[in-house]
Image (cartoon, rainbow, N blue to C red):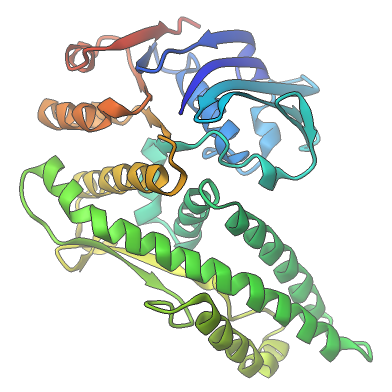
Length: 362
């Protein structure tokens, strides 16, 4: 898989700009603030239909404009495909896939698969559980349409359930609560099942990838923290436990007036030589660990979909020494890769054999 063209209209600082890409590595250079990261954001947005930089789509609409448009053309095993997204200033959007209107976001998420690494990626380790859930949810949604649909339904039902619990009244309140819990169990169990599957895939790859980057063997792994047992369990087994958990929490949640059990409370923990990476790793160690996760994610995406994801490296190589830069470049040789970097960093170009340069001057 590779993206062959990108067109931006009223997107961030681009009133109108067309880009053509080859299958190789594209290095985007320019001074700070000229819009290098905006190109990476647009490509990533085509993949997940959410920005990795903001929670509000209309933040990407150029100031004082009524809309923005992102259009991507890409080549997959199925041939040439095209995705067009119109983002309105009111946060609504219209989607066209191969020139046909799309009503469900789930139908296009992951059509163009990307893996993104940016300076903000360190938040996955440093910040709270919501950052880690977002990471794992976006990663899995791109390779599993059912997961994305289950996640959307789960979030919708949780909002409805919390609204009910806040004002727990009416003759049918217990019946409605039971209906919500049944939907949460069905969708939450699949979410838990696939999160554990993804973590298991990461753990099979992480230590060997990390060793290639640092030159020494370290015990690198991720633990999934859920309120139901998920390891070595089938979906049906998780569903049974999940249903029981919600039933037992019924009166506690009524008392708390909030949903206290479920997939929305999950967390993942990164370990480096059996020590919590958030507490005991330096920022440099955390960065290499997350690069290892990035590379593992590319392999999982390829294995699960049969398509090579597009890799987006936004201003991260400048933090690495030349030896590790070279290792990163060698690892990504088989993937279409986009790299943003400031002017004057010729060390990256010297490590590449097949690349194009896009210079952004405004």
